[in-house]
Image (cartoon, rainbow, N blue to C red; front, side):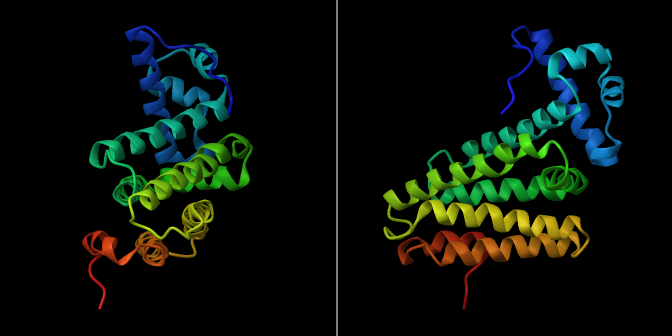
Length: 215
């Protein structure tokens, strides 16, 4: 993970950074990865291009920081909705992620293309794949400790499946192999099938509340 170019301490610096990342997300949503430029972000954020380079280093670092910013927003939202780790947190995190995807599908498409086919992948892989796998593993271990999933479950393997099946479906969607509605449906179905295969009967009511009861 690249080191940040600058430590943001003053209120003015924090506000400027937030404006730059907000501008980056908006331009990615409108124009995709290729159409987003440092000059365009600087103009949209109302800052000098040199300031942006000094603060972030370049386009790849800027997009990386914008992705991390969104990821942290999802994590913060999850902690507010489900402060106790475990199955509830896993469900709330997935819900927050899907809401972001539905709100800004073009942003997700641009990021998925960058992740799988562009130079930012070297920075995005830890942020979008390795970190979510580790966080999911911790949540599953907490669910295991609280008796929500079986003791014999390999939490690391299940965490990898949760994250990688998500990105496989997103990639198929970004390659126009399915509609946005089909993508969100398949994400939900794959997520549900995997969780129902590991959740103990005593905790199945949480899945019924989230997905709807099965026959």
